[in-house]
Image (cartoon, rainbow, N blue to C red; front, side, top):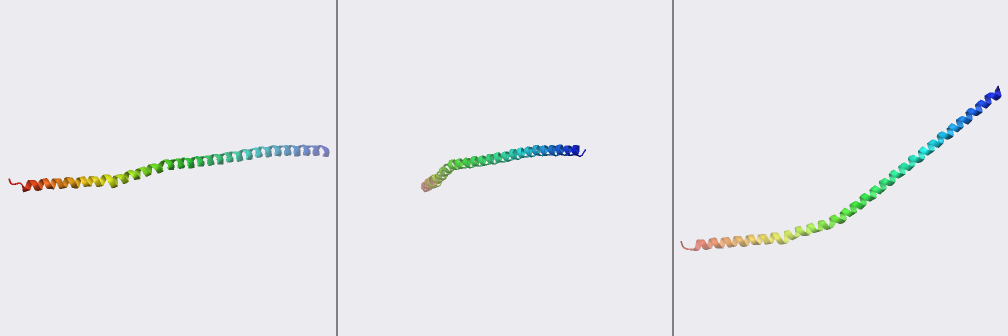
Length: 108
């Protein structure tokens, strides 16, 4: 009888050992897949960050010349076009004044 009980105990202990090994293997697999997923997610995040930086650099390379062109165009308008229009307005006003003074100076 004691030998029979000890055999049962040994079988139960071996079964517990086997189940524990299976559980540990499953846990190891789960840990490895979770770690791999986390590493993949981190890699994708790094790649997305790099793409965003590259896109920002391209945008700045395009935006900077456009801003310089816009500043040049506004400077052209401010320094050449507007003063010449003001000069034309003054000339037109002077002409109008001359015509009016000539009209007023003529005898009726």
